[in-house]
Amino acid sequence: MRFSRLSKAIAAACLSVVCFGAGSAVVTTADAAPNGNLVAFGDSYTSNPDELRNTLKNVQIPDIQHFVWGTYPSRDGCLQAPNNWPRQVQRLSGIPVADYSCTAESSHVLTDKVNLAIRNGDIHPGTRAVVFAVGINDYGPYGIGRGATPFDQNKMRADFVRNVVSATNRVRSVAPNAKILLPGMLAVTEPYGVQSLCFLNAIPNLALGFPFPLLQHVENLNRDNQRAAAAAARITYIENKDPSAGHNTCVPADTRWVAGIVDTTNHNMSLHPTEAGSRFMAEQVIRHL
Image 1 (spheres, rainbow, N blue to C red):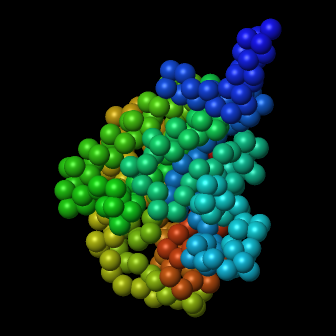
Image 2 (cartoon, helix red, strand yellow):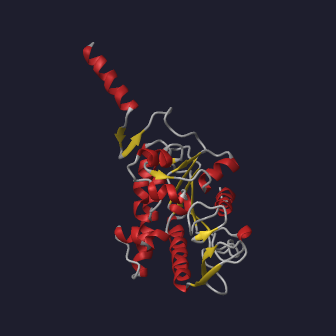
Image 3 (cartoon, one colour):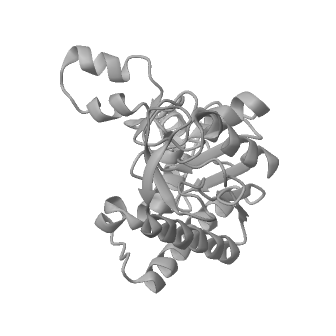
């Protein structure tokens, strides 16, 4: 009798918390995300939180903490805009979306984030799609802090491909029928002609900037890495750079999809997608599902 009760208690505990088998977590059906869901991973171009809130999120003052965390969407300490592209995907398509995007994300943590989504029950056999919107931060301080070597492009590409393939294999081990997408970035600088970054957009139709060919070069390297990783992992790459030409930081406010540093368009973070830019990315993801 005591053994039977003990067995039932252990089984109940295993189901209500986490029970590991074959290297992955088992989640109760009640806790799992609905079938047909989409899971989004990405950096700040995806999370795209309010810049002031994101700057103040670690300030330990009650009023500021309430301003930052009181009603603003977040996951695991990562702020996420209510109008970012994953949430626009859900609004436009009705597909349930679990957003794991986070400012400062790079490809180096992608597999760990996939494992977290599996443990949480968001990636499961009924998952419809998984999106990996990462790459550009591999060239910045966050990627360098995780071992990236921007001055060795061959290694950069090999590492990025390896990280994406690893995350893809992990998804497929749990959700073999899920479609996996790797969307490219919007054009920050003009892809054709003068490769400028317009940082001052205080006058709606008079953007002020300067030539920034190095940024254009990094944008192209990042796109090449993404294409190579998509091919190696046999997943779908979504081209966003060319289709967003004419919507970069240097165009008039009503057609701008990436904000400048000082900018009058409806945006959350400087040098990040405007609300219209996030909508375009959402539409691109929906189109490829």
